[in-house]
Length: 345
Image (tube, rainbow, N blue to C red):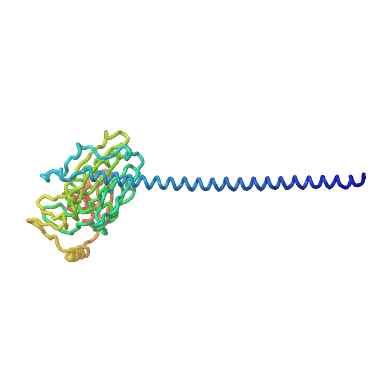
């Protein structure tokens, strides 16, 4: 009997140890499962968070687009008087249509998609030193916005009736040959209408390092290929509009020239070219391209004048405003620069 007990007792102990080991293994397996589940949950949460952030960003862009559409709807072209010799007209008591939700000090640029007729819509941005150009401006001759015609008239600076007008100026947004940011605008609207507001905004940013909400909407009536004008809005953020605050309509007109806004055709008493059919225009542009020769110029980014390198005015220019340019003279004019009256480049 004693021998039997001696044999059974070790067996019982052995079975107990084996049972305990299985339990520990099961516990370890359960811990591993829990760990894997937690890791899976963590990965799922990360994916969910990323999806939510992407959705919020898309929603933000949608709200900006919707807001721009609302602004366009709020603006009524029929309330704008006929052009009477002044390049721009104050709208909405000079108060831009920005909502509180739109105003931010985080720089961004948003260029609306072209509409079904290929026309530009709204360019909307918060401009600041972050968005301003850091390199020389390139060519924009490859872009042919709706209503574009290469046509010259005597009495217009540079002779060309039309410029490729940036909605958000290159000096503010550094966008150059962006078809969503270029419309066909008269030389008069580009230089007399839009440029003073663009320079005022750029100067303010340079001086204060602040941000400016900035939106430009071309106003096309019905199915016209040429805009009647542009609505320009701006509001300085950090000082709540103390530095920059305007809401103006700039007329897309040229004194003494009659314009057909449906097509972009034009006529005047004195002219060296003519508003022609599409095929004639292409021939004209081709000949113009063949006869164009690049040259060296010195440009003053402050006065928006360009000079020959030998011009005496170059020596008096501030270094920060002086840039060299090699290219086509007409492209400089298209970009808003005027030839110097002394050296006549």
